[in-house]
Image 1 (cartoon, rainbow, N blue to C red):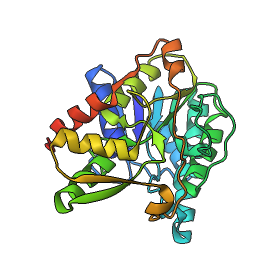
Image 2: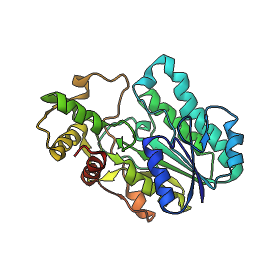
Image 3: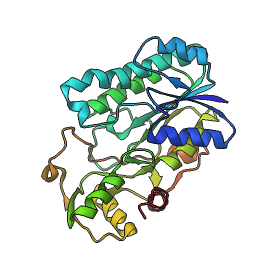
Length: 290
C-alpha cells in the first residue's frame, strides 16, 4: 500500500513512516522541509493536484500547527488556520477524488474539558477553549466530508523526534531543586512509537470513524506524570503541585478534563497501547535520558 504521510519530519510522522516500512508498505514522505519525497506546502490549493498526481492508496495526515500558546498570538492566527484547516481541506479534496483512505490526527482540545466523565469518540459536545482547538475541530469537520475516514484524537504526546514535556522536565530538573507542575489537568500520555503502530493497524482496515488513542494505565495529572519521570530517572528534584490558576504562565486555555475513552478500539479489534509508565521507561532508554 502506498501511504502519503504529511508532517513526516515531525515526531509522530517519523514513527509512522518507520512503522509503514517495517510492514512492507510504501511510505511517501512529505513535509515543508527535510529529506522528504515531496516538499509539500499543504496550505496552497495546488497541493490538491500534487497529491492526486502522487496517487496514494491512503493518507495519514500528521502535519499540524501544534504550538498551542503561540496559536493565540494574532500574528500567527492566519498561519494556524491555513495549516490546520485549509491544509486539511486541500488534502481532503485530493482524497475525495482519489477515493483513498484518510486518517486525521485530532486532539482532546476539541472539547471544553469540563466534568470528570471520559470523553467518548462519538461525543459531539464540542466547545474548544483555545484557537488551536478551534482549528483542529474545523479540520475534523473537513475530514467528515469523506466516507473512508479515521479521526483519531490523542493527548499529551511525546516521542523521540521532537520537543516534549519529558525533555523539558528533565532539563529543568537538572538545574532546579524543585519544579511547579499543575495537578488539576487530567489525562493520559501518548507515546508516538506506540501510536504509530495503531495508526498503521487502522489504515490497513476499513473500520472507519472516530477513535480515541492514548497509552493505557489510567488517568493522571501532569504533576503525577512529572513525579514518575523523576522517579524513573532517579532525579531528586521536588515536584510541587499547583493549580492551573496558580501556575498562570499559559496564553491558551487548556482543558481540565482530557480523559479519553478508548473502549471503541477494543470493540473494533484494535490492540490498545501499552501502559504509559512502560512507554515512559522505553522512551527514556531510547532517548538516552535514563
